[in-house]
Length: 238
Ligand code: DC
Image 1 (cartoon, rainbow, N blue to C red):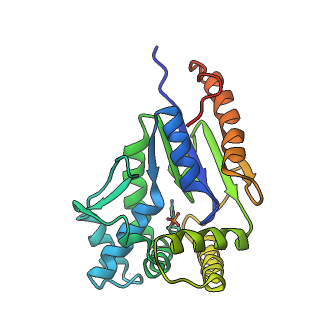
Image 2: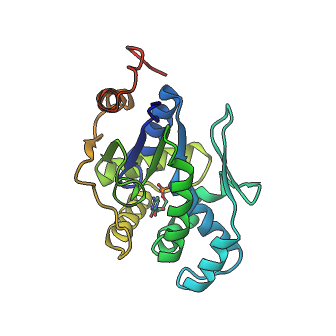
């Protein structure tokens, strides 16, 4: 019987390194990388463009029905397409970030996106990153990680990221926004940010990307063995 490849879930608050690490893991393993935050962001951007309020559940539900969200892989990085339009930059503005945590609290948005995420990931050979992957989307994922870092460090990372993109940002304000989003994501009624009981928690405060990646690879190697999959080549690296 051919064993399917693993489903890897990476959850945690914003700025904890999920995007970078899931991209690296996916590249090393030859897996598909699915950034579920980008999907919620795309819904928020569309709501903003069509003037649908984050409180208008029925409006958001209708909006999700007609939405096509796709990922396009390119050498320059993954692109996010909304109804065929490249919105990779447009979904990352601070304004859309704040709107996203409100839109993501709507149960009908979550239902629509969880369904899409399951259909994209169920064949295995995927790394999904988000907030509820190990708890709701794929509770039976073979490898689950929960990445953490202090709010100050995460805010600082986000600040550097935005600055590099040429945006005018204030460090203290970026940290405050990270804290604000943490509070919204952790307190919402539907699928709040929670660590799955069987997730491996890694606090990346003060650690390099390489150190975190190595910890994750050790877990992945063990889970591959457990699932009867062939060993990854030793020293597999990017
Ligand atoms: O990971 P990110 O910063 O791109 O996520 C954007 C927002 O979407 C953030 O407020 C949390 C929310 N989100 C969610 O509720 N569930 C997910 N699976 C992924 C993201």
